[in-house]
Length: 400
Image 1: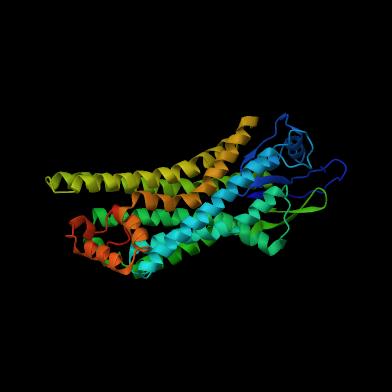
Image 2: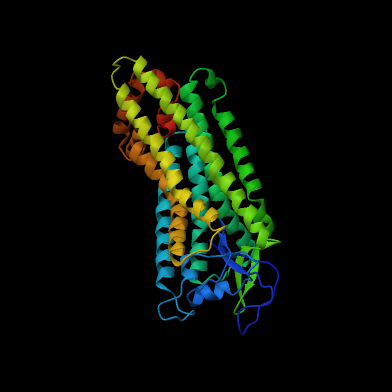
Protein backbone atom coordinates (compact mmCIF):
# COMPACT_ATOMS: atom_id res chain seq x y z
CA UNK A 1 0.00 0.00 0.00
CA UNK A 2 1.49 3.39 -0.94
CA UNK A 3 1.50 5.07 2.44
CA UNK A 4 3.53 7.89 3.88
CA UNK A 5 5.52 8.32 7.04
CA UNK A 6 5.80 11.95 7.94
CA UNK A 7 7.16 14.31 10.54
CA UNK A 8 6.86 18.06 10.93
CA UNK A 9 7.60 20.53 8.18
CA UNK A 10 5.81 22.68 5.61
CA UNK A 11 5.88 22.42 1.85
CA UNK A 12 7.28 25.01 -0.49
CA UNK A 13 4.98 24.88 -3.51
CA UNK A 14 7.69 26.05 -5.89
CA UNK A 15 10.32 23.49 -4.99
CA UNK A 16 8.25 20.73 -3.48
CA UNK A 17 10.38 20.78 -0.35
CA UNK A 18 10.56 22.64 2.88
CA UNK A 19 12.78 23.24 5.83
CA UNK A 20 13.15 20.11 7.98
CA UNK A 21 10.50 18.45 5.86
CA UNK A 22 10.15 14.77 6.63
CA UNK A 23 7.36 13.65 4.34
CA UNK A 24 8.32 10.38 2.76
CA UNK A 25 6.28 7.92 0.67
CA UNK A 26 6.50 4.41 2.04
CA UNK A 27 4.87 1.04 1.78
CA UNK A 28 2.93 0.20 4.91
CA UNK A 29 5.52 -2.38 5.91
CA UNK A 30 8.18 0.25 6.01
CA UNK A 31 11.53 0.28 4.32
CA UNK A 32 14.08 2.91 5.19
CA UNK A 33 17.47 4.15 4.08
CA UNK A 34 19.66 7.22 4.38
CA UNK A 35 19.95 9.28 1.17
CA UNK A 36 23.73 9.69 1.15
CA UNK A 37 24.68 11.45 -2.10
CA UNK A 38 21.91 9.63 -3.90
CA UNK A 39 21.42 10.50 -7.58
CA UNK A 40 17.97 9.51 -8.75
CA UNK A 41 15.65 9.86 -11.75
CA UNK A 42 13.28 12.87 -11.59
CA UNK A 43 10.51 11.34 -9.50
CA UNK A 44 12.92 9.56 -7.20
CA UNK A 45 15.01 12.70 -6.86
CA UNK A 46 11.84 14.55 -5.90
CA UNK A 47 11.33 12.04 -3.10
CA UNK A 48 14.92 12.29 -1.95
CA UNK A 49 14.69 16.07 -1.72
CA UNK A 50 12.06 15.79 0.98
CA UNK A 51 14.59 14.70 3.58
CA UNK A 52 17.76 15.93 5.19
CA UNK A 53 20.83 13.74 5.54
CA UNK A 54 19.86 12.99 9.13
CA UNK A 55 16.40 11.69 8.24
CA UNK A 56 15.23 8.30 7.10
CA UNK A 57 13.90 8.28 3.56
CA UNK A 58 11.30 5.72 2.63
CA UNK A 59 9.98 4.56 -0.71
CA UNK A 60 6.60 3.76 -2.18
CA UNK A 61 5.45 1.31 -4.80
CA UNK A 62 7.21 1.07 -8.13
CA UNK A 63 4.68 3.29 -9.84
CA UNK A 64 5.48 6.19 -7.52
CA UNK A 65 9.20 5.62 -7.29
CA UNK A 66 9.97 5.62 -11.02
CA UNK A 67 9.22 8.34 -13.56
CA UNK A 68 7.66 7.73 -16.97
CA UNK A 69 9.96 7.51 -19.93
CA UNK A 70 9.18 11.04 -21.07
CA UNK A 71 10.09 12.50 -17.68
CA UNK A 72 6.64 14.03 -17.21
CA UNK A 73 5.70 13.43 -13.57
CA UNK A 74 2.04 14.06 -14.35
CA UNK A 75 1.96 11.10 -16.74
CA UNK A 76 1.41 7.53 -15.67
CA UNK A 77 4.52 5.34 -15.91
CA UNK A 78 4.56 1.86 -17.34
CA UNK A 79 5.56 0.55 -13.93
CA UNK A 80 2.44 2.06 -12.37
CA UNK A 81 0.26 0.29 -14.93
CA UNK A 82 2.09 -3.00 -14.47
CA UNK A 83 1.79 -2.90 -10.69
CA UNK A 84 -1.87 -1.91 -10.87
CA UNK A 85 -2.70 -4.77 -13.25
CA UNK A 86 -0.73 -7.20 -11.12
CA UNK A 87 -2.52 -6.11 -7.95
CA UNK A 88 -5.83 -6.36 -9.78
CA UNK A 89 -5.12 -9.95 -10.80
CA UNK A 90 -4.09 -10.84 -7.24
CA UNK A 91 -7.27 -9.22 -5.94
CA UNK A 92 -9.59 -11.06 -8.36
CA UNK A 93 -7.97 -14.47 -8.05
CA UNK A 94 -7.72 -14.15 -4.27
CA UNK A 95 -11.36 -13.18 -3.81
CA UNK A 96 -12.55 -16.09 -5.97
CA UNK A 97 -10.18 -18.60 -4.36
CA UNK A 98 -10.85 -17.68 -0.75
CA UNK A 99 -14.60 -17.45 -1.36
CA UNK A 100 -14.49 -20.94 -2.88
CA UNK A 101 -12.69 -22.30 0.18
CA UNK A 102 -15.17 -20.71 2.61
CA UNK A 103 -18.20 -21.89 0.62
CA UNK A 104 -16.83 -25.43 0.29
CA UNK A 105 -16.37 -25.71 4.06
CA UNK A 106 -19.68 -24.10 5.00
CA UNK A 107 -21.67 -26.09 2.44
CA UNK A 108 -20.62 -29.47 3.79
CA UNK A 109 -20.60 -28.81 7.53
CA UNK A 110 -20.79 -26.24 10.25
CA UNK A 111 -17.59 -24.14 10.34
CA UNK A 112 -17.22 -25.09 14.01
CA UNK A 113 -17.50 -28.85 13.44
CA UNK A 114 -13.76 -29.52 13.27
CA UNK A 115 -10.54 -27.82 14.29
CA UNK A 116 -9.04 -27.76 10.75
CA UNK A 117 -12.23 -26.18 9.36
CA UNK A 118 -12.07 -23.39 11.95
CA UNK A 119 -8.49 -22.51 11.04
CA UNK A 120 -9.06 -22.76 7.29
CA UNK A 121 -12.21 -20.60 7.31
CA UNK A 122 -10.57 -17.89 9.42
CA UNK A 123 -7.40 -17.87 7.34
CA UNK A 124 -9.47 -17.45 4.19
CA UNK A 125 -11.64 -14.83 5.87
CA UNK A 126 -8.73 -12.58 6.86
CA UNK A 127 -7.31 -12.80 3.33
CA UNK A 128 -10.73 -12.06 1.87
CA UNK A 129 -11.18 -8.97 4.06
CA UNK A 130 -7.86 -7.60 2.89
CA UNK A 131 -8.55 -8.37 -0.77
CA UNK A 132 -11.91 -6.59 -0.61
CA UNK A 133 -10.03 -3.45 0.40
CA UNK A 134 -7.38 -3.83 -2.27
CA UNK A 135 -9.27 -1.80 -4.95
CA UNK A 136 -8.74 1.25 -2.72
CA UNK A 137 -5.00 0.59 -2.79
CA UNK A 138 -5.03 0.21 -6.57
CA UNK A 139 -6.91 3.50 -6.89
CA UNK A 140 -4.29 5.20 -4.73
CA UNK A 141 -1.47 3.72 -6.79
CA UNK A 142 -3.05 4.96 -10.04
CA UNK A 143 -3.59 8.35 -8.41
CA UNK A 144 0.13 8.77 -7.72
CA UNK A 145 -0.39 8.38 -3.99
CA UNK A 146 -3.39 10.68 -3.52
CA UNK A 147 -6.24 9.45 -1.31
CA UNK A 148 -9.86 10.29 -2.15
CA UNK A 149 -11.83 8.34 0.45
CA UNK A 150 -11.49 10.34 3.66
CA UNK A 151 -9.72 9.87 6.96
CA UNK A 152 -11.90 7.07 8.35
CA UNK A 153 -11.44 4.86 5.30
CA UNK A 154 -7.73 5.68 5.39
CA UNK A 155 -7.45 4.18 8.86
CA UNK A 156 -9.65 1.18 8.02
CA UNK A 157 -7.89 0.21 4.78
CA UNK A 158 -4.45 0.76 6.28
CA UNK A 159 -5.43 -1.43 9.23
CA UNK A 160 -6.75 -4.15 6.89
CA UNK A 161 -3.43 -4.12 5.07
CA UNK A 162 -1.45 -4.55 8.29
CA UNK A 163 -3.93 -6.91 9.90
CA UNK A 164 -3.79 -9.27 6.92
CA UNK A 165 -0.15 -10.07 7.50
CA UNK A 166 -0.30 -10.33 11.28
CA UNK A 167 -3.52 -12.35 11.57
CA UNK A 168 -2.75 -14.80 8.77
CA UNK A 169 0.71 -15.36 10.23
CA UNK A 170 -0.69 -15.98 13.70
CA UNK A 171 -3.33 -18.39 12.39
CA UNK A 172 -0.78 -20.25 10.29
CA UNK A 173 1.38 -20.62 13.40
CA UNK A 174 -1.58 -21.91 15.42
CA UNK A 175 -2.39 -24.40 12.66
CA UNK A 176 1.19 -25.66 12.78
CA UNK A 177 1.03 -26.13 16.55
CA UNK A 178 -2.29 -27.95 16.17
CA UNK A 179 -0.81 -30.28 13.55
CA UNK A 180 2.17 -30.89 15.82
CA UNK A 181 -0.03 -31.87 18.76
CA UNK A 182 -2.28 -34.03 16.59
CA UNK A 183 0.65 -35.91 15.08
CA UNK A 184 3.13 -36.20 17.94
CA UNK A 185 0.57 -36.51 20.76
CA UNK A 186 -2.53 -37.88 18.97
CA UNK A 187 -4.24 -39.28 22.06
CA UNK A 188 -3.29 -37.00 24.94
CA UNK A 189 -3.99 -33.86 22.88
CA UNK A 190 -7.59 -34.85 22.09
CA UNK A 191 -8.68 -33.53 25.49
CA UNK A 192 -8.10 -29.92 24.46
CA UNK A 193 -7.94 -30.15 20.66
CA UNK A 194 -11.65 -29.49 20.32
CA UNK A 195 -13.65 -26.93 18.28
CA UNK A 196 -14.59 -24.75 21.31
CA UNK A 197 -10.92 -24.47 22.25
CA UNK A 198 -9.96 -23.67 18.65
CA UNK A 199 -12.64 -20.96 18.46
CA UNK A 200 -11.34 -19.41 21.67
CA UNK A 201 -7.80 -19.50 20.30
CA UNK A 202 -8.91 -17.87 17.05
CA UNK A 203 -10.67 -15.06 18.94
CA UNK A 204 -7.51 -14.47 20.96
CA UNK A 205 -5.41 -14.40 17.78
CA UNK A 206 -7.70 -11.81 16.18
CA UNK A 207 -7.49 -9.69 19.34
CA UNK A 208 -3.70 -10.07 19.43
CA UNK A 209 -3.48 -9.00 15.80
CA UNK A 210 -5.50 -5.84 16.45
CA UNK A 211 -3.16 -5.06 19.34
CA UNK A 212 -0.11 -5.78 17.17
CA UNK A 213 -1.11 -3.08 14.70
CA UNK A 214 -1.52 -0.45 17.42
CA UNK A 215 0.95 1.88 15.62
CA UNK A 216 -1.36 1.81 12.60
CA UNK A 217 -4.44 2.67 14.67
CA UNK A 218 -2.55 5.50 16.37
CA UNK A 219 -0.71 7.11 13.48
CA UNK A 220 -2.62 6.32 10.26
CA UNK A 221 -4.08 9.59 8.94
CA UNK A 222 -4.43 11.91 5.97
CA UNK A 223 -1.22 13.75 5.13
CA UNK A 224 -0.87 16.84 2.90
CA UNK A 225 1.04 16.25 -0.34
CA UNK A 226 2.40 18.64 -2.96
CA UNK A 227 -0.20 20.06 -5.31
CA UNK A 228 -2.82 20.39 -2.57
CA UNK A 229 -3.38 16.62 -2.57
CA UNK A 230 -3.92 14.33 0.40
CA UNK A 231 -2.19 11.02 0.98
CA UNK A 232 -3.09 8.22 3.36
CA UNK A 233 -0.21 7.35 5.61
CA UNK A 234 1.38 6.81 8.99
CA UNK A 235 2.70 9.89 10.75
CA UNK A 236 5.27 8.67 13.25
CA UNK A 237 6.32 11.14 15.97
CA UNK A 238 10.04 10.87 15.14
CA UNK A 239 10.51 9.24 11.72
CA UNK A 240 14.30 9.34 11.93
CA UNK A 241 14.35 6.85 14.79
CA UNK A 242 10.85 5.39 14.89
CA UNK A 243 11.40 3.86 11.48
CA UNK A 244 13.98 1.52 13.02
CA UNK A 245 11.89 0.13 15.84
CA UNK A 246 8.85 -0.03 13.53
CA UNK A 247 10.74 -2.17 11.00
CA UNK A 248 12.29 -4.44 13.62
CA UNK A 249 8.96 -4.73 15.42
CA UNK A 250 7.25 -6.00 12.28
CA UNK A 251 10.12 -8.29 11.32
CA UNK A 252 10.20 -10.20 14.59
CA UNK A 253 6.48 -10.22 15.37
CA UNK A 254 5.10 -10.87 11.88
CA UNK A 255 7.84 -13.05 10.40
CA UNK A 256 10.88 -14.25 12.36
CA UNK A 257 9.21 -15.63 15.50
CA UNK A 258 6.22 -17.25 13.70
CA UNK A 259 8.45 -18.78 11.04
CA UNK A 260 10.73 -20.26 13.70
CA UNK A 261 7.74 -21.87 15.42
CA UNK A 262 6.34 -23.19 12.12
CA UNK A 263 9.70 -24.64 11.09
CA UNK A 264 10.23 -26.45 14.40
CA UNK A 265 6.66 -27.78 14.40
CA UNK A 266 6.83 -29.24 10.90
CA UNK A 267 10.29 -30.63 11.50
CA UNK A 268 8.99 -32.57 14.50
CA UNK A 269 5.95 -33.66 12.51
CA UNK A 270 8.03 -35.10 9.68
CA UNK A 271 10.33 -36.88 12.12
CA UNK A 272 7.35 -38.41 13.87
CA UNK A 273 5.78 -39.53 10.59
CA UNK A 274 9.07 -41.05 9.43
CA UNK A 275 9.42 -43.07 12.64
CA UNK A 276 5.80 -44.18 12.44
CA UNK A 277 6.30 -45.42 8.89
CA UNK A 278 9.19 -47.59 10.03
CA UNK A 279 7.10 -49.09 12.82
CA UNK A 280 4.13 -49.81 10.53
CA UNK A 281 5.86 -52.51 8.54
CA UNK A 282 4.62 -52.44 4.99
CA UNK A 283 1.15 -51.23 5.93
CA UNK A 284 -0.71 -50.51 2.72
CA UNK A 285 -0.80 -46.81 1.83
CA UNK A 286 1.52 -45.68 4.61
CA UNK A 287 4.30 -44.52 2.31
CA UNK A 288 1.82 -42.69 0.10
CA UNK A 289 0.39 -40.84 3.10
CA UNK A 290 3.89 -39.91 4.25
CA UNK A 291 4.64 -38.42 0.84
CA UNK A 292 1.39 -36.41 0.85
CA UNK A 293 2.05 -35.12 4.35
CA UNK A 294 5.60 -34.17 3.39
CA UNK A 295 4.42 -32.33 0.28
CA UNK A 296 1.83 -30.33 2.21
CA UNK A 297 4.24 -29.47 5.02
CA UNK A 298 6.92 -28.32 2.61
CA UNK A 299 4.41 -26.36 0.50
CA UNK A 300 3.01 -24.48 3.49
CA UNK A 301 6.44 -23.60 4.88
CA UNK A 302 7.84 -22.61 1.49
CA UNK A 303 4.79 -20.52 0.58
CA UNK A 304 5.05 -18.57 3.81
CA UNK A 305 8.82 -18.15 3.52
CA UNK A 306 8.96 -17.28 -0.19
CA UNK A 307 6.14 -14.75 0.04
CA UNK A 308 7.47 -12.79 3.02
CA UNK A 309 11.20 -13.45 3.36
CA UNK A 310 12.30 -11.21 0.44
CA UNK A 311 10.27 -8.28 1.73
CA UNK A 312 11.53 -8.50 5.30
CA UNK A 313 15.14 -9.03 4.20
CA UNK A 314 14.97 -5.86 2.10
CA UNK A 315 13.41 -4.05 5.03
CA UNK A 316 16.36 -4.90 7.26
CA UNK A 317 19.04 -4.32 4.64
CA UNK A 318 17.84 -0.82 3.87
CA UNK A 319 18.11 0.22 7.50
CA UNK A 320 21.87 0.32 7.05
CA UNK A 321 22.88 0.78 3.40
CA UNK A 322 22.17 3.09 0.51
CA UNK A 323 19.78 1.67 -2.10
CA UNK A 324 20.43 1.32 -5.80
CA UNK A 325 18.10 1.48 -8.77
CA UNK A 326 17.76 -2.33 -9.08
CA UNK A 327 16.78 -2.39 -5.43
CA UNK A 328 13.52 -0.60 -6.19
CA UNK A 329 12.54 -3.24 -8.71
CA UNK A 330 13.40 -6.01 -6.26
CA UNK A 331 11.44 -4.25 -3.54
CA UNK A 332 8.29 -4.06 -5.61
CA UNK A 333 8.60 -7.71 -6.59
CA UNK A 334 8.77 -8.43 -2.85
CA UNK A 335 5.63 -6.34 -2.26
CA UNK A 336 3.79 -8.32 -4.94
CA UNK A 337 4.88 -11.62 -3.41
CA UNK A 338 3.61 -10.53 -0.01
CA UNK A 339 0.24 -9.54 -1.45
CA UNK A 340 0.12 -12.77 -3.48
CA UNK A 341 0.21 -14.76 -0.25
CA UNK A 342 -3.43 -13.73 0.26
CA UNK A 343 -4.47 -15.71 -2.82
CA UNK A 344 -1.99 -18.58 -2.64
CA UNK A 345 -3.35 -20.71 0.21
CA UNK A 346 -6.52 -21.87 -1.62
CA UNK A 347 -4.36 -23.32 -4.38
CA UNK A 348 -2.30 -25.26 -1.83
CA UNK A 349 -5.48 -26.72 -0.36
CA UNK A 350 -6.91 -27.66 -3.75
CA UNK A 351 -3.75 -28.96 -5.42
CA UNK A 352 -2.29 -30.91 -2.50
CA UNK A 353 -5.32 -31.68 -0.34
CA UNK A 354 -6.92 -34.77 -1.80
CA UNK A 355 -9.93 -34.78 0.50
CA UNK A 356 -10.42 -31.04 0.16
CA UNK A 357 -10.37 -31.38 -3.62
CA UNK A 358 -12.93 -34.19 -3.31
CA UNK A 359 -15.14 -31.96 -1.19
CA UNK A 360 -15.18 -29.23 -3.85
CA UNK A 361 -15.82 -31.78 -6.61
CA UNK A 362 -18.56 -33.61 -4.72
CA UNK A 363 -20.36 -30.36 -3.93
CA UNK A 364 -21.13 -30.00 -7.63
CA UNK A 365 -22.34 -33.60 -8.14
CA UNK A 366 -25.97 -34.85 -8.14
CA UNK A 367 -27.34 -36.02 -4.81
CA UNK A 368 -26.98 -39.75 -5.52
CA UNK A 369 -23.37 -39.38 -6.64
CA UNK A 370 -22.62 -37.16 -3.66
CA UNK A 371 -24.10 -39.75 -1.32
CA UNK A 372 -21.98 -42.45 -2.92
CA UNK A 373 -18.78 -40.48 -2.29
CA UNK A 374 -19.76 -39.74 1.28
CA UNK A 375 -20.51 -43.44 1.82
CA UNK A 376 -17.13 -44.35 0.40
CA UNK A 377 -15.37 -41.91 2.71
CA UNK A 378 -17.25 -43.08 5.79
CA UNK A 379 -16.80 -46.75 4.98
CA UNK A 380 -13.04 -46.47 4.51
CA UNK A 381 -11.22 -48.30 7.34
CA UNK A 382 -9.95 -45.88 9.93
CA UNK A 383 -6.22 -45.34 10.17
CA UNK A 384 -4.51 -44.64 13.50
CA UNK A 385 -2.99 -41.46 12.11
CA UNK A 386 -6.37 -40.26 10.86
CA UNK A 387 -7.94 -40.63 14.28
CA UNK A 388 -5.34 -38.21 15.56
CA UNK A 389 -5.88 -35.72 12.70
CA UNK A 390 -2.29 -35.58 11.39
CA UNK A 391 -0.81 -32.86 9.22
CA UNK A 392 -2.62 -34.16 6.14
CA UNK A 393 -5.89 -33.09 7.72
CA UNK A 394 -4.83 -29.48 7.53
CA UNK A 395 -6.55 -29.67 4.16
CA UNK A 396 -8.53 -32.88 4.67
CA UNK A 397 -11.67 -31.31 6.00
CA UNK A 398 -13.85 -34.34 5.28
CA UNK A 399 -12.12 -36.67 7.73
CA UNK A 400 -12.86 -35.95 11.34
